[in-house]
Length: 270
Image (tube, rainbow, N blue to C red; front, side):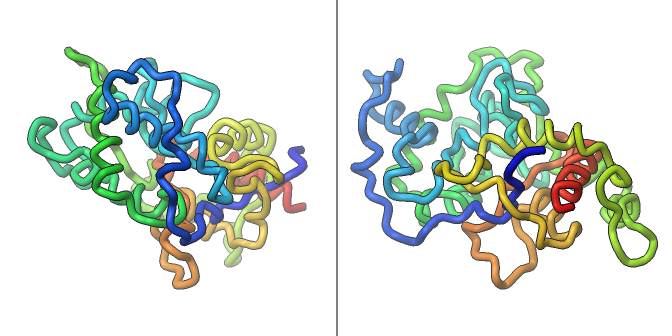
């Protein structure tokens, strides 16, 4: 059993003004000859947020950028909550089937990035136009010249569940008496522990490290835990916009995997 559990709501940052000079140190980058792209890469991988923010979250915490990614599986040891940004500019649609044109549209705005830079950007502040331009320049490099049938160029699926409705999803983990199944009754706790490492580990780390702590979701009802995993925005007046978790749609974490993750969390509670 992991010695620490899960804080599913601690993605927030403080509201202090972020000092751009802190992160503008050079990275070993192939884009050193293009300042716009190099600074966009710096924002994407930004290793300096820990100097001014309690959490070391970056774009890369939630979005992989490898040409070896698929829409459902990242190429490295983590499976991040959000889809890869590789070939993002070639996708035909975004949330709700919104269409856009790579040559005419702004990636950050048209591609849903306004959610990221408002809810999860460091210090809880919006990204400046200058920062957005740098980041967009970098994202436009993460594209195959001829994507062919690359699945990362396909439209995205943000469905909550593979069940016909959300009610069906929750009915499957209800105990029939107004409560929720837990432990081995809802899934496989051992598999859930491994899933917690792979699917949560890019953002949540053991206590003492600079990231949202892998600590207590235990005080939350199961339904609230699921809503925080599956939905970026929840109906909670006490939750600030920059304290919400990124949503994890079912094509990134299946219903069965989510049940196993809940089994691990509820077993850890015991």
